[in-house]
Length: 272
Image (cartoon, rainbow, N blue to C red; front, side, top):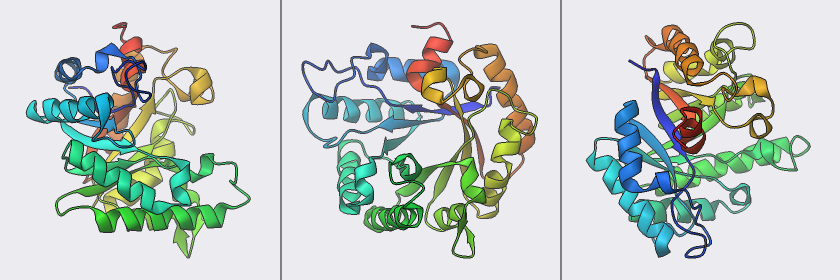
């Protein structure tokens, strides 16, 4: 059985001529998403929810895709994140509640990255405080039964924050976590297992479900060839992530490996 159990999916099939939020990616049609997940035994999709996810052609697609996946037994976490939300956390709340109206789900997945803003690292403390405030606001607004998930890079386990780590502060607030540890190999000091290890142990110790994230996008997007499986191919992706499962699979909360992302994984498999 594959260690690859979930994926991020950022694209939709809607034509840009119909909706400015459209991505023109036909394999993201609901039926095709379901077929891909069934073929790959995917258990959860973190599905990109646009702003105003209950409106227009893209909103129609998002609701239909969420329903189709869940009917097929695939969990869906509406996925989103905008650096502008850091200064206006109420926007994150609006986005989340709108996404849930369009496609009801058991979780929301936030991918807000303060370290990717121009203010980092000079304004690190302010940005991190804003991030935590944003998480608090979204968590407080979520309906009963809906958990808050967050994507976090592995190195947050080493980032000091108020007597602990920034990851500790995140884990205190969320219901699930995706530990992003982009590397094209599992073992060694710069491999996925070593990078993700401290964050994974922290998440497991906190009693949270967690996945480990890997990359299949281009070297340019990933920041270097060593961070993505684009050059290694699908067989190596399976082999290396099997080693990740060997390392973490017995930890409480482990839910497998998440692939970044649907479009590039399909390309890696030669489907597009």
